[in-house]
Length: 248
Ligand code: NAP
Image (tube, rainbow, N blue to C red; front, side):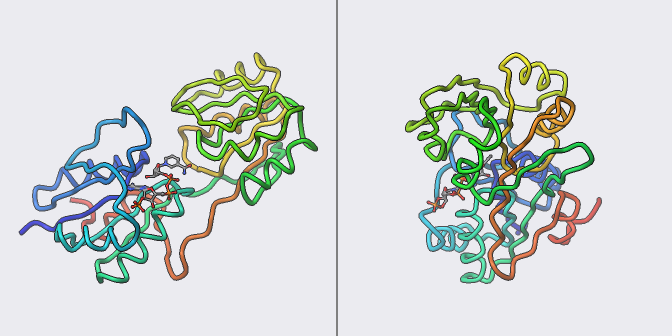
């Protein structure tokens, strides 16, 4: 029978990996999505949507669906599902590959302030700027809700849920973004500080170049650590290699 690979998805890399696996007739691929966005992009192969019910639920799913390997290709900040994947893989003996795009790093001209969490970023913020482009996603904005003296331009794919900062303008948009458009946006809203997660990748990196170009500070939220003993590969070809499915 064809080996069955479960891809934990929600990222560009997961979609690319699913396409690479689906192109191999000898492999069966299922991508799992959390179901957070109302219109997820098209994914090749089978798709299932919604939580598994913790690490135990995921382990049951792996056994029930005869999964031969799991690739955790979730977002670097999706620490809950990554912890569950590590525990479910250990419990079932199903091999786990973690695919994580590399993080961003500051270059000449960048004025970055590192924060350990959203809460830490909110603590730093009043000392760094007054007009904030906040691009950390729609979840967790409660951490900024008490900052009544700051103006926020919040950009997210789906509308965020309250509590939210009171002085806020919402922009619904999905990357990729260009440096020209990001520069224009920062100027239009007279932004004086950008807040971002260290998501890595190219789709949302233009804001960093635009901030550098305009001399603006950026508060960068560091990634949560991987579970103990887990290492990651940085791209789809290396994930395929780990699965024993190098170039064909
Ligand atoms: P999370 O905090 O790590 O996960 C919370 C719970 O959501 C998990 O315990 C699991 O529920 C369910 N879940 C998460 N990802 C899942 C998946 N791919 N398939 C099935 N269930 C999943 O996750 P999150 O930060 O809310 O992110 C949710 C999804 O959005 C992820 O798949 C991630 O790749 C994507 N995403 C996240 C971010 C971000 O900044 N966090 C950004 C872009 C995309 P059960 O315990 O019930 O199994």
